[in-house]
Length: 356
Image (cartoon, rainbow, N blue to C red):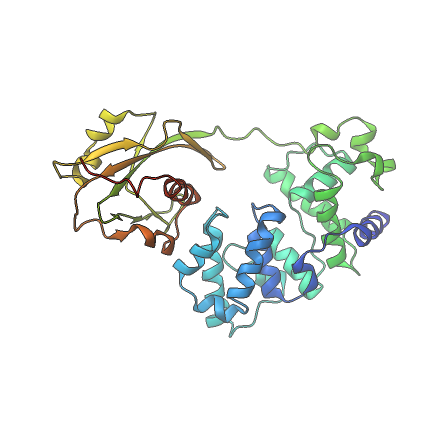
């Protein structure tokens, strides 16, 4: 109880002024939690405001099209969160008559909701005594109690969940959960934690045993895979191009992109011109190709790094290229594509376009 009381007291004096802390509406808390998965608070806040303004109720979110939601989500990454958000909104409206589930066991049934999110919503909105465990909580508990079990192992996840559940204040579950998360984010930080001013420092095992920098412990990560993306960007004199919807279960599902050649290593212009994808797409005799970025753009995802080049292909008018360049913003695209379009438009390319 002393542990929880100390955290709650610290929280009441140090908590950030965040919009989702001014409500217990489960729809808004759910929105904020999904947005903040894999996203920093300072970045996620703007998206939270945009979603609340555009879709003030779960009915509004359910009525939206997936393409609208993906467009609004653009730049946040991990787009499966947006698709799951839309799927679950429809489930709540159509299967639950618009009533947000009110218990941990029912909330966790929503697509895209795991133990942490279900615990957060259940405790904050409905007062259920169920402890949250996220990266911040792992860090606080591992350091304070000196636990060296790997947090990314099944044993570690079970151990820390049970420990967190033992420590939660049953009278103030919402305050306790928010306090320990905030404490991990602002006091017991991954790098340079403020141990001198920490109200728990006199009993922190990691501090006493000089283990702060080594806890929490993680098993070694899987090797990062390198992939090489070569985007083919067709542009006609009347400024039409081609966007293709990305199918399948891989990254960026249902987003739009330019035609692409994926390779195992960097390829040169000759390899691009002779690739079957290029030959099938471009049958015109009169065209020119130029590399937009000589230095590959490295886009880092959790399990892979994408080394990307954009090849601009100038060619005559053609019926197969149906996307007007100035309409690209109507499509949800990966941030990698979005930034390229912005960068190209900041050059004099379109004002000096000429097919020789």
